Each structure stands twice: as C-alpha cells, then as structure tokens.
Length: 235
Image (cartoon, rainbow, N blue to C red; front, side, top):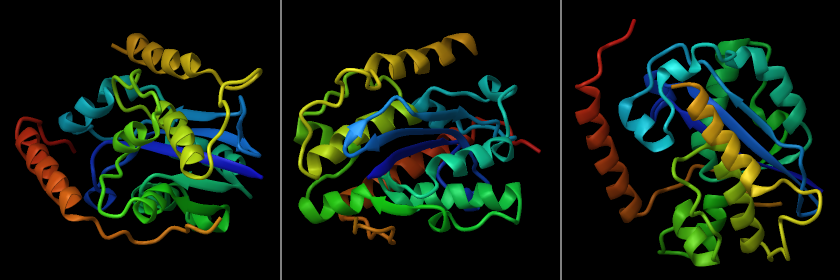
C-alpha cells in the first residue's frame, strides 16, 4: 500500500483571491513505513507573499525569484502521486490550490482525484475526536508527536509530522525512523538551509468548521487585513 502525506505552503489564504502555492512537500509511506522517497519543491508564485503568511512559514518573495514555476514541476509531481492514496490535513484547502495551479499551468491537466485518491486527515480527526481541537499542533499534543522543531511551518516538515499523527490515529507505528528511513533531521536541516541560503475511506469533502475554528479563522483574516495595509500593491 502506497500512501503520500502532502502539505503545501502558500502566499495567502485564498486561491480565489489570486494566492499561489510556494512550496509542496510530500513523504511516502509503503505499508505504513516511511521511505526516503520524498518530494519537495519551492515554487516561484509570480506574486508577492502576504507578510502575515511569511510570519507563518518564514518564506519571503525574494527567496523564490530563481525557483521553478509550478508548470515546470507539474509532470514530476503527477508522476510522484499517481496511483497513491494522498493524505492531506484539511484536504479541500490544498486540493483547491493544487487544482488552481494545474489549471493555470495547462488546460490538459485533470482534477487531482483522477491521478490519486484523497484522504482528509482533518475529517478523520473530527470523526475520532468530535468537539475537540483538531489542528495539527493539537493532534501532536494528543498523540504525543514531537513537533518541537517546527519553528516555522514548512511543507516537507509538516508532511513528516502529519505522517506520524496519521499513523497514530490509524493504529500506531512502532517507529517511523528505523534503518534506512527518512530522518527527521534531514527535513529540518533542508528547511533551515533554504532559509539561510536565500536571505481508505475518508475521502475529500467539504468540511464545516466548528465554532472555535471559525473564530480562529476570523481573527487570522483580521490580522491579514491589518498586515496587508502595510504591503505595497503588486502588478
């Protein structure tokens, strides 16, 4: 059984508002064992990154000037996920961004569920823990997953953390980091190096947020609005 745990980082909250993907990070599970076959790319979004978003993932616009466009890595990405079950925390968010990128890259591309199946780990968590907080950080605390190295949100690092959480939610795993597996330090070092060098049945569905999540989302939107007033408009 091949599963891909996927995360993205973006320039802002809404692709409908013109925001774009700036990083894709994926780790591979084969029969519930993590392999060294991971996928990660930083992407030039061809637009400014909201300053509030940079506060979350630590990536600013200048870091991405020489990175490939999504169209340049689209075929490689499809080849990586094709035929797998792709696990995403809050799948509609990432899938919406990914399908928007495919559409902008070339009209030949299909919906992402034509290449793989989609599992939403947030939906799973809500079914397992109704009425509780089910953010990735909250799940790390609940399942005793170490996320102390998560200084910034990075797609590859978050995919690794989500893999641990997902395995814990679905039956546990003796060790993700056995002989020959992807080491946690490798992912963290790659994320830090980038910053330094640059200056199956839980399918995708529309998720209704609970009241706490709605409140947090509204507070974040208000924060973004305040920050956006300080950022120059881009053409």
